[in-house]
Each structure stands twice: as C-alpha cells, then as structure tokens.
Length: 311
Image (spheres, rainbow, N blue to C red):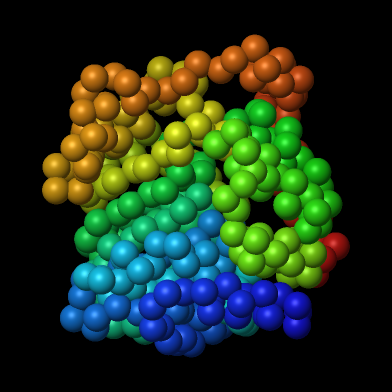
C-alpha cells in the first residue's frame, strides 16, 4: 500500500489550486474528500470512475473551483484514502453512504458530476434523491443508458479476470488510441497510480445496474451528458426501444441553461447520433454473443469469486 499512497499523493500534488482533505465519518467507515474553491460557491460533488480516485480531477479542478465549492470524493469500497468499516453491498446501501456523506458535509443540495462508474453513481443518486441534486453532469457514463461494447469487453477481459498494472496500462492505452489515434497525452503520474491500484489495492464496488426506461423518464434533475468523440466503452447502436428512453434524457432533459449551444444544435441536426458498428464490431459481437446472453450471471459469478479470493 505504500506505493499506492505515494502515487496517490504525487497526483494530488499536481492539483493547481489550494485544497484540503476532509475525513467524513459514516456508518460505512471514513470517506476522504478533497475540498477546494470558495466556501460561498455553489456546492459541486465530483465522483471519479472506478479505480481513478478523487485525484483524477487534476486537469479540471482549476476551472471548476472558480465559482464552485468543490468536493472530490474517494468512493467507499473503491481505491483511494477512504477507509471502509464495511463496504456497501448493493445500490441501496451505496445511496445511503452518499446520503450520509452529504449530511456530514452539511450539503442539503449539491450538483453532482461523475465520470464513468462515478456517473452511474451520480445518476442513481439523482433517481434516489432528486431533491438533493441541483444539477447533474455525466461524463462518458457507464451502464447508464446502454450496455458495454463487445469490443471494449474483449479488450478488458484480461484485466477483469486477473488484474495487474500491466494489463491496466494496456487497456488505458488502447482506449486512448481509439479516441485520438495515438496513446500519447496520457498523464504518466495518474497512469502509474491506476496501475498501482490494479497491482496492490483490493476493491469491492457495487456492480452497476442500468436504470430502466420508466426510471429514466422520471428523471427530473437538469442533466448534461457528455460523450467521448469516439465511444469505445458503451454500445451506442442499441435497440430503438432503449434509444427512445435515452434520447428523452439526452435531448429533452438537458435544459438550455446547462446544455452548450453546440450540443443542442448537434442533437437538433441529428449529427450527434449513435454510430453504426463496423465490420470488426460485428465480428466481435458474434464472438462474444454467449457472453452477452449469459453475461450478467457469468460476469457476476466471476467477480464474486475473484473478490472472495481477494478477501
């Protein structure tokens, strides 16, 4: 763990703004929160992706802290400096944990911004306690509106079966190359931290379950959804019945004060639309079709077994 803590502190030291650490006590243990920005600013809670830790916002926090009182959270049960007494076992307990964190921070209402797995937590919390969420920002959300891409699962499978720093690096570099055509531009200090998490840090997170169509249609919180230019994690070519529900959230649930003009124009013109899979995607789809059919059970069994071995 010494290597992990050293890497964590190194990335946190790269934050370009003054910040302080708070330890928030809940019945699930101690949650580490990094705080910055004016105390009179609008409260903004940041939820990182799986294994990313609260330090991951180093490139965004300077802009975010100018008018917001920022609270970057290490998710309990995941990597970070949070120390769980017991980990949340399901979505309901995870929501209770976040309830308690907001209570201890004296936040009756806050905006939530989450990336990937953190975006799923943010969306789930907005459905759980809409009165406590002022605004919602979902950055490249995972398991919120669609399932995992077969191509992504194919590349992630080695890491899921046997986590290691090398496999994590390979997956992140592949994701980056798929986005930009090259794996350059990655922050090496954060990549070292993420690799250390895969090597050394046992994690037990609540597995995300995608909200159903009625739940999404009931979302009343103003929501901004930002997708990567080339999405490699989420399947965007999905049945029309799912598209209908997600389009309702993406295009109609994003109010003008939150949605940038370019996004509203892209949706209105139809240019920001699901991409059809290429030949390679279809080949991979048929290869992993048994995993798609039996995946929820098979993957859950694998993860439970792996976590049992780690415990």
